Image 1 (cartoon, protein in one colour):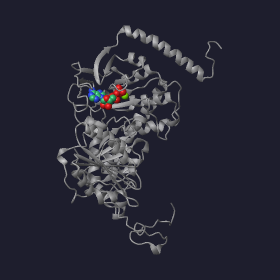
Image 2 (cartoon, chains in turn green, orange):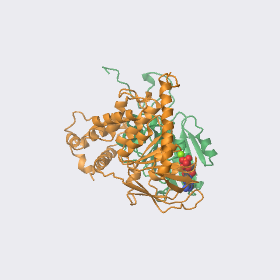
Image 3 (tube, chains in turn blue, green):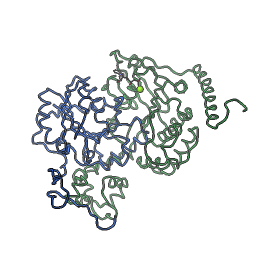
Length: 232
Length: 336
Ligand SMILES: Nc1ncnc2c1ncn2[C@@H]1O[C@H](COP(=O)(O)OP(=O)(O)O)[C@@H](O)[C@H]1O
Ligand SMILES: [Mg+2]
């Protein structure tokens, strides 16, 4: 089975891109499944199910969905292998712009949209910087110049990525993307022993562990204080 | 090719001298280089402590590779010969799998070709085949040649070397910038040599195409539909490096369409347009007829057909005249 991890800011068009890409892959007779990671709520799994795609959903609750991803991806991969999938696609929403669920040697795709503003690419961390493929969506509604400027900004922070432009509504470009998703040479049978491309921030503090009271006496672990001295 | 070892121990100052475009690489990657001309790249990348590294998501190794990659790309971009004088479409199959009945279709620079056919017939797919430089690897199995040869795969994957620029009816400006700032930003991203001159030219040409003129200080988001389209076309003609312009359904755009095509052609573009607008279709040298996903005919625009064009243009001018009067608050009746 191949595994492809897709990640991107909320409402950047991940689900539409994946659905359209799967349409194209299915035409080649491949069996594809999806696992959707989110925090509190998602109904994307219903969209996948409606399209006849085997899907699993994982809600991380109060935990960072990317930390949750790492803790569960091996089990999910085993599920996919058990289902006889040729390709498993994981979809997760990058929330803090800092974590990223990319695993070394597993194809990593970041979805980002033209409407998010030219300064967005430099604000997004490893999720964009260490992706193999960057999919830019909503290009059908902005000008050619803005598409070119936006793509050049993405290229500045990740020059080695392949940049693809996809229209999530019509699916234009998704066939092309699908050719990069499935690769018989990168078949996996387990993720055990593999490594993340980037360390996730060590965010464990008292509040992560359920503390609710405010005040220094209750703060342990990784505590970072704002600098309120001096000017701006 | 420049490898990471060739840049790691060089000083920032001398790197910036050789590769001025690195300034935006440092800037967008959150690296402060002001006053750091004497530091080496290695020093710059390694001076972050663990906390900053974590915070800013800095990976020294990745950054060094990316910097080398960026330099190579930009050098290639500045030197490359993007000249596309012809594309060739080799036949594939229609939606029923029936082979298309032509041997090959060559479209040359400074030529305008329109693509007509009902919705869903495969116009956008054909434009998509060209953009992806299909090699029998799309649903149509068509193949696209550039300058008569099987093209290099960099046409598919390079950010700066895009074969195709697109214009369509649904496109809008979304950035919060004035016309001038916007064109400047675009010029900057293209590393053009004399930005001020080019920006000036884009604005002048756009104003020639637009029904109503606009100033360089106008915010792009408050341009009218016609003005936006005019600016998009002028900008794409002059600033986009893509040799092929795909126009997907621009009808009644409130611009001087003939002039727009002339501008694109004068900039050596090859123009393909999916359209049902008879004026645009007749302005084209040829039109490709698509049915059920396949190219069924190619019709040369004859002089006889062109006589219809002048009738249509006359009608178009009449309508435009009424529109102008309406806008000016005048009566639509002659002489009132
Ligand atoms: N030759 C073909 N073989 C198979 N599918 C095709 C072919 N041509 C077009 N299609 C598919 O038909 C659908 C409609 O085509 P599209 O190009 O969007 O039509 P149009 O732009 O003319 O409205 C698309 O999903 C496209 O991929
Ligand atoms: Mg179409």
